[in-house]
Length: 145
Image 1 (cartoon, rainbow, N blue to C red):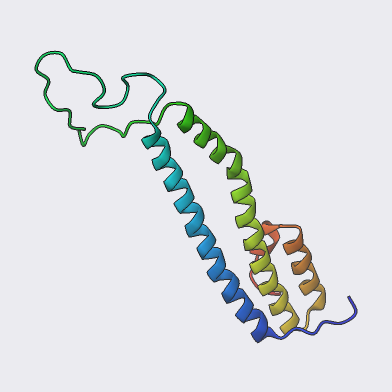
Image 2: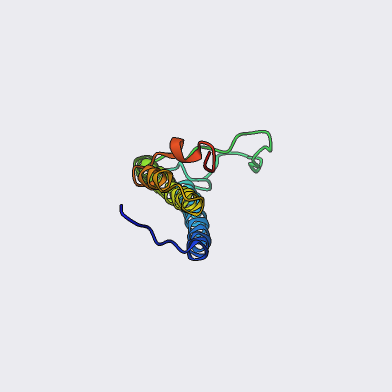
């Protein structure tokens, strides 16, 4: 890399925009997990008569109220299993997205700081760490020497 021409204010502005979008992505993923969990609970099971209110109760039956001391029922059935499997398989992808975003933001900030201080080699190392998603190198000692 022969020369660099970085405008720190421009980088700072883009990092703010990226941070906002990363927050939006985090909210969307959280909502996805919540909605899929609720869908799994609402889907019920494939066993006839397993839904509340199905069938005719025999004899006098007290209305069932969930106890506040009971753990919520785990979703069962084929739909719940499929949704759970989907989330389990995508968990790695979601984590990788978060790591790449974090590496890009940290790498750009660190490389820009090194550039401002005149250490182009350290700036290049920060850039390479971001490209390789080496969060351990980027989180290490925030600035230069």
